[in-house]
Image 1: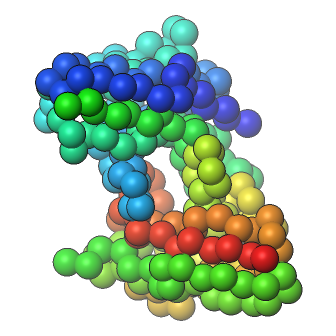
Image 2: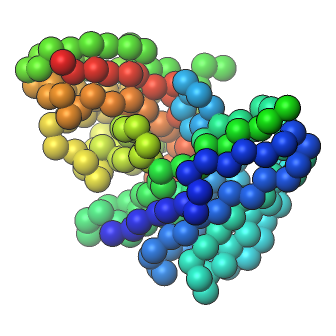
Length: 117
Length: 113
């Protein structure tokens, strides 16, 4: 099955600096990836997605980079703000759990981003 | 715009008790999901409903049952709770089964003693 890991379980950055959160995945057949943000006491929130036919996608203050050769993606947050403090999950789309079933997301354990004043 | 509403927010059960976690969405989404989140781990899919009238097992279905009551509501039932089911449970919905921009509820924190 899919395993998803992150290079660092915690990351602390100064307010205003850029943040880079990394994610490694194991399944070379993964073709779609999503980043979610989860604030304390809340459910995850969709941030940005990227398909395997792209190597970069930009949103508002966020950029996701995908390197399929080494099965790695990263989430870059520009000018990190206190409101960015949260756990960030990358979630590749996995193989179907059974024949004919829908493909599901596999969530990693997350990286806790703390923004320092 | 409520989005996805889960009840209750907190629950303590004794081993062997049963309970149903409720979930409702008001976005006219076709697909709904139940996940559990354990400390230091990502979310794991318990069951999902790709569309009204269908349900399928996820990664960790044992000990749970679900009902897609109508398009809006998707409930998760624990028939005989076990301490291993202590977790935070999240319900989510999406427009369709192949749309992965899920909207999550705020979770139910369940403790089984």
